[in-house]
Amino acid sequence: MTNPNNKNFAAQLSFEQKLDRLAQVAVRIGLGLGSSDAPAQELVMSASVDALPLARRITEHAYRAGAILVTTLLSDEESALLRYRHAPDASFDRVATWLQDGIATAYRSGAARLAIAGGNPALLGKEDPAKVGRANAAFSKASKPAMELITRHEINWTIVACATPAWARAVFPDLPEDAAVARLWDAIFAASRADVADPVAAWQAHGAYLKERVDFLNAKRFAALHFRGPGTDLRVGLADDHLWAGGGTQAGNGIFCQPNIPTEEVFTTPHKDRVDGTVRSSKPLSHQGTLMEEISVRFEKGRVVEAHAKTGKEVLERMIGTDEGARKLGEVALVPHSSPIAQSGVLFWNTLFDENAASHIALGQAYSTCLIGGEKMDAATLAAKGANASLIHVDWMIGSGEMDVDGIAANGAAEPLIRQGEWV
Image 1: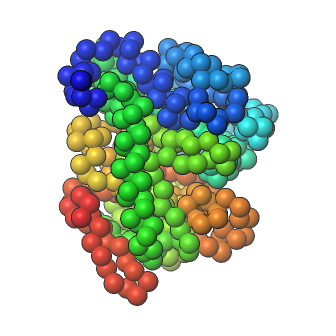
Image 2 (image 1 turned 180 degrees about the horizontal axis):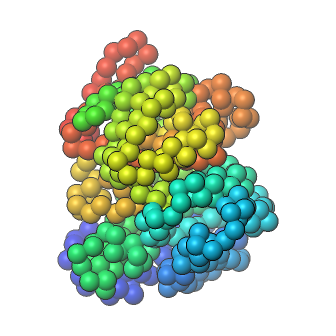
């Protein structure tokens, strides 16, 4: 019998077979379509034109799993650049609100959501940071109704990745483009468990492992986490009645889904007013086409009061200036340094992957489902529990093989959780 995790098995598969398996994982595991209790759903999918082959495979598997209608919204990075080169200044405060309203309406009507990631991480690196910031702020505001349904996990949703030439060149700059794309695809297939004999079974086993971590942390009821590492001495208070999550979630529509493919994290909601200390990023952050490297910030009473970055500082400052909640934390996540993504040695320049290589924090909107009964709370009640509200949600990596993390009990006692990047 073939070992489903045997690396030799991957070599026996063709690229087309792996691509098909990734599509199957996206639909069956990511969205939870095809389960016996899943209703006939619409699916709204977003993808770049470079991702069309994967989008078509996902469409096929979605229909086979019972989707009643699949609608794909395509984007093109070259067209996005033309806006920055030729559009009038007023363009950067505008967004297709009608489209965002339509997407929110689809979600409210029960549609699932799937996004295919794979953009050029440096797409807007040479563009005017002021215009980038304005465009991002306008988009965040217009997409808020749809994003609230996602952060509340009202619908089943997931994100998967597609290797694209621009992304591959950023990850493997020393390789010819064809070789870089092939290497990136191999890394995506491995991290997404699409290159094993039974991808669905492999994901079910991985989900069970993450649930063990979740159950352990929920039983502990820590009041705070204390991170210590190079450039980092950070105490993150946890929201009242917080819940840890990871390895999949039950959406508000009753469907069990896996929001991120891949995932190695367990995460919860920090208290927006109880974060203090300094923290330094351990990996670069690619945010909406701009690279930020060597980020360091200082928190006081939950709020960023000082922020620096070696590159992308202007974009960082505009990002945290989006609204008051953009200066506060909405998520804290623990990831062991031995995660397969970290051990691959690949810096993906993509948060979907890099956040699963290291423990991380997220500035901005909190997940209400990471509070006991949070999915039924109004905004005022969520805020009273400590959950942050913002137009943004941006993860950045702080963990490494030199990071120690303690759980802090309500009485102040510290319990080792992670030492040198590994679970105790």
